[in-house]
Structure formats: C-alpha cells, structure tokens
Image 1 (tube, rainbow, N blue to C red):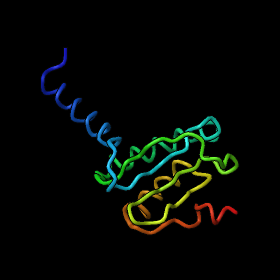
Image 2: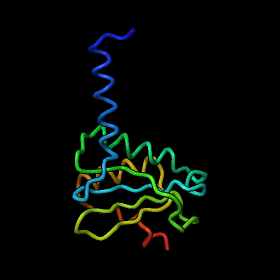
Image 3: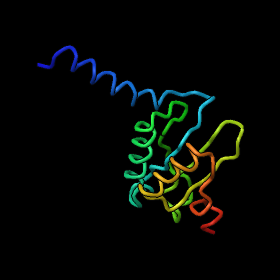
Length: 122
C-alpha cells in the first residue's frame, strides 16, 4: 500500500499530464499526426518527446495533442504548431531530436525552425 504522500505525488504528476490535454483557445497547440502512416513513420517517439519536453520545461500555455491523418503521408511524421493570432507552422519528417529543437527554438524562443517546415521539404 502506498502512503498518502506517495499517492498525492502520483496524483499531482498525473494531473499535470491531464492538464496538457484540456482545451484552451488561448494556448498554443502542438498537433501530432497519429494516423497509421504517421505511426509507421515514427510519430510515437515524436509525440512523447514533445509531451515530455513541454512537461519537463514547465510550459503552461501549450497543449500537445494527437490528430488523425493530416493528408501528407510522404512527409510523416508531421507536427503542426498552432498559436493564437499566428499562422500555423507545419513541421515534416520529424524525429524526437528535431522535436526537442522545436520546443527550444520555436515554442520557448519564438523562432520557427524553418529547416524542418513543409516549405523547406518541397
């Protein structure tokens, strides 16, 4: 049996994860394409890297969410960053390492990592 303190710590940790999923129109959304093609191309580690990165950095105004097919299978894994009042940015051929770079440079630093965007892949 866990002690009350241990259970409280587990609850608080899980609540932080759940709070990443609560809809808020004023927050930035990081959307990961998780259809079959995305998963086959490696979207799971990308989703995990983004979710873990946001949580580890304590970023409160960002949600990491999953989406179905984005329609660009050739460019999977695909990540879209949708910030209020800004144009959507679509990152393609993502990896966990690239996702960490996007967190640092785009989400925290405010600079789009253009070398990973759909425009650079075409």
